Each structure stands twice: as C-alpha cells, then as structure tokens.
Image (cartoon, rainbow, N blue to C red; front, top):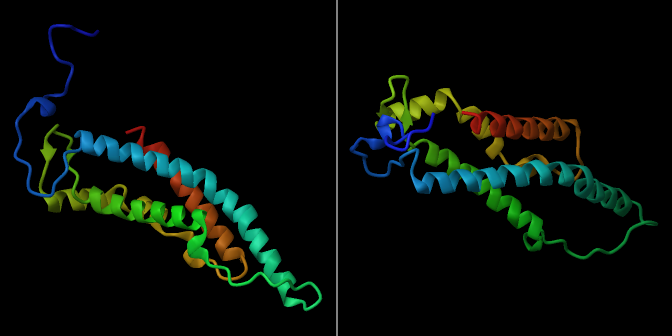
Length: 175
C-alpha cells in the first residue's frame, strides 16, 4: 500500500553518490527527457519506414523504369535529395539513434544488489551484453542499402529494422 509517511523511492535514489565526469544518472531528468525523445523517434521510424519502403521507394523505382524507355522518359531535372524534408528528418533520426548509443555507454545502471554502477568500463560491458546489438541495428540508416532499385536484400533489411525497432520499444519500456 502507499504510505504517506515514508518515501516510495528505492534506496539508491535517496543515497548520495559520486558520479564521474561525463556520466549520466539513469534516473535523472535529462535521461528521462532523452528516453521520451528516443521513444518518439522509434514511433516515427515504425510508422514512416514501412511507408517509405512501400510507397516512396516504389515510386522512385517506377520512375527509374519509365525513364529507361525513351518513349516514356520525362525530364525530371536534377533531383536533390538534400532538399527533401523526409530525407532530412530521416538523417536527424538516424543521428539521434547513433547519439543514443553513445549516451548509453555513459549511463549508470542498477546491478542485482541494488547498487548504482558508475564505472564506465562496467557500464560499457553491461550495455554491450544487453541492448547494444538491438540499438546498433536500429541505428543503421536503411537508405545506405538502397541503390536505384529495391532488391530482396533491401526488403529483408527493412523487415529486420522494423522488427528490431519494435522489439527495442517493447523490451526497453517494459524493463
């Protein structure tokens, strides 16, 4: 039951701890804000990536096929991907996921003895054993694997990316 006399916080949140430089406390407001930002990025990716892979890339492939034939060719001019807002947002999201990996290498965690681990070597090893592979797969921009036409490898990669992002979302926010 909830008691009004005693705080309901774990003991490690009430203790005074020494935090090394460039280390982020896992229960800090900064980390909570960052986790919400990552959640928004994951939801964006889970919605936009399948849409892009299904419709926008398919349109580009169809345009490429039509442009090969002189009878159906249309002068589209020079297409600059850097002026496409979707391209820019996708790269911002990809960079954010990469920064998240770096942040996770410097974020404290609580071990099985309810002790806050602040040693960067232990934090890094713990992260490598737990979430690193999933985060790394989610951080790889799938645009790097797309040439002019979408092939089976790209479709498989897109499916793996979507599944890994959904698994990340499910496992991360349940723990």
